[in-house]
Length: 121
Picture 1 (cartoon, rainbow, N blue to C red):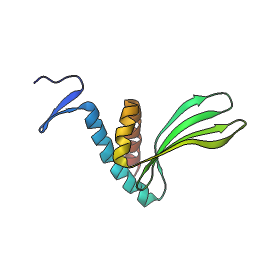
Picture 2 (picture 1 turned 60 degrees about the vertical axis):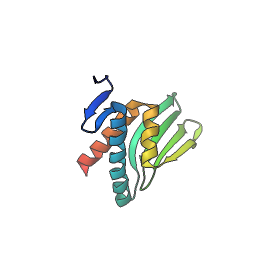
Picture 3 (picture 1 turned 135 degrees about the vertical axis):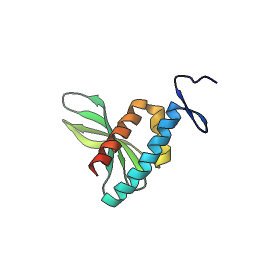
Picture 4 (picture 1 turned 180 degrees about the vertical axis):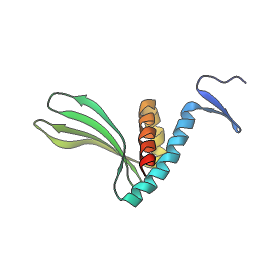
């Protein structure tokens, strides 16, 4: 059976590229959460500016803690006092699927940040 553009062949059959990325991210998140537990501080997965003006900004920030991934939407700057507009808490498994549904670019940014961290440690 020929492969489509989004599929790769493995010994156990065909897997979509998106599924492979999600599995890779899940594996890396599990290892990163162990590291975050040992370091006792969160590890940045991604930081995305959602809206920006001359005086204020709205950012989405995802971090890995010991057992969870926390995604926060923060507004700050100018006359706006810093505040959390949204906060999501995920297990590593749930986060991998959630972030893939949002954007493949965010998945790649998470993987790149985790790779950079592993080179430093």
